[in-house]
Length: 282
Ligand code: AMP
Ligand code: FE
Ligand code: FE
Ligand code: ZN
Image (tube, rainbow, N blue to C red; front, top):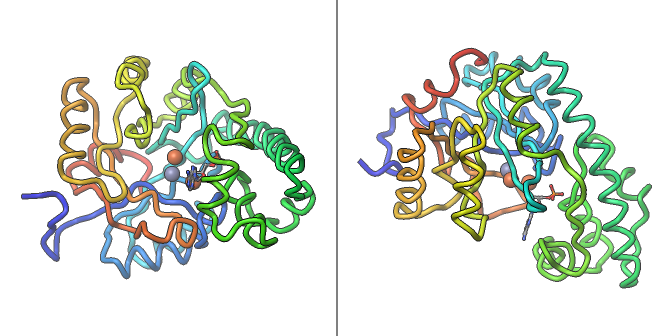
């Protein structure tokens, strides 16, 4: 059966979404509530470079009967290209992983400063303190938060316009910033008992680059994503088979930040969920 045509009772778990601790608009409890409303049985909150959502999400998911697996989306780079790694099924208590996230957040602060400097040169004036103050409860600050202030101050008419005209990849105010090499992130994830998946592979322009990455020690690849067509999914499933990799999938839901992407619009079934989450599930 086509994976996007589940029976009402079939198990569905969305393994890629963001809370307000990174760049999503919903807090962890609201995400759990929405997951249940959408009929999902399983969820993984994969905030960028922070595990903070889990403190709130774990007791609430337990109370509500939603299966929650541990997850995070780590920002890394390889050959000067940004690579996102989805880590799953690790221990939330692992000190090295916690420190990795903290160090990555410091690198992000430096990068945000550089982006704001570039914007200032174009008379788009946002102070670093303004960015921090308006997102006090956010653990991982990045481009979506800068875009939100640009919108709020009337410099753009939408978040999308901020990315399209100024801060999207390779646009005039884009800064790649410093992050950790893929190899280091893979080591940290594995030492924390987790599994590493290459996130949204379709965002890479070169298939040779994807193949090079997959040979570095990944456990899996994200094959179901957002509003992928069946043919797109098939392409990534084939690659997973070729490299003998596990398969993950999720919406990459961000709430209002990406309003067309709904929670649960991509998901994995029970067998795929169980292949990934063997230890750290609540
Ligand atoms: P950052 O981690 O600061 O580089 O920001 C990356 C996040 O910005 C992604 O996870 C998306 O949520 C968002 N984003 C990146 N590129 C775009 C784009 N072209 N349009 C809209 N949102 C984007
Ligand atoms: Fe994001
Ligand atoms: Fe990502
Ligand atoms: Zn994501």
